[in-house]
Length: 379
Image 1 (cartoon, rainbow, N blue to C red):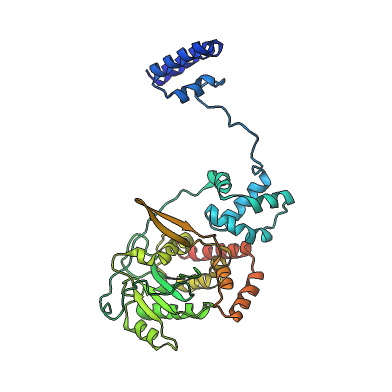
Image 2: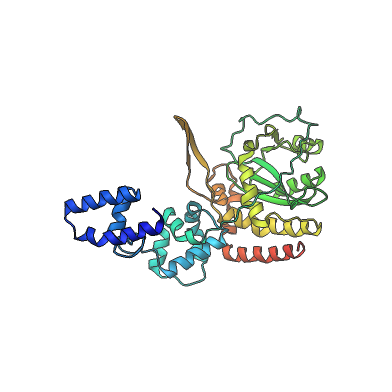
């Protein structure tokens, strides 16, 4: 029996089903399920629906109190300006963004946004979720010269202390790794999730070390450890001597070859901080390095570390055949720095004053303006 025949059969028996007694309805329902092959519960929905066709009745109950144009506009604007944070992170970011929202909101709407759940945010934003998914190329080439001198990181770090950094590079090569192009260096602190990015032309040891030093000067804490993959841009004598000659020597470690999850903290930042910002185009003009570093150092660093909450793994346990992971409450990297007892008070005062002077919507506008200038050199 085809779809049209089933539909015609349904329309023929629906009126008779409604007029029948309880025993008669049971007999009609049994016959309907046997003829059409429907599940009993699905057949009951079809027979009980007064409208034509197979559409189910409206969900009972009153409309959601969150489905108001004012609330939806505010939520959509903050979600888009925050680079489409997931619902749990967006819920934590709303108190940081709402004071800077430039459109008037009623007190009722503000109260609803203060108490809105992550599940409700998911439901309200479902229709405008971004669907594009792209993959890039890996530009990591193994460096074997110093593998005996740089130990594999074996969980000896005290990651409850700030200053233990994971680093990686991202190739802005487009569809080909041939020739010269821009690379992005990403460095993230495991304890606070503070992340800094810098651009360099190719990935020579001098350029990479120059950007590492530049990042060190901007961090609100002292670097204690540096962990990287086995790429040739990191396993160099220049970097090894530099870390060993620091006033407080920096622990220099590397991950296991072909185990990218050893650097999981920075690997996911390659997507959320670099690819979401610049995509997968080829950056083959040396002039782009200065423009990208201007954006990375100023607006993007402030935007990412002050207004984008991140989640950290709180616990991981095996239950039967599954791993059960629980994550902590989303918090911004700047707030983690302020809450950590080992960060100097001078650094905390500087961050607190800086936070009060920032507007995330203005930062986002400046980021977009600089991105337009960058992509004009690419097209």
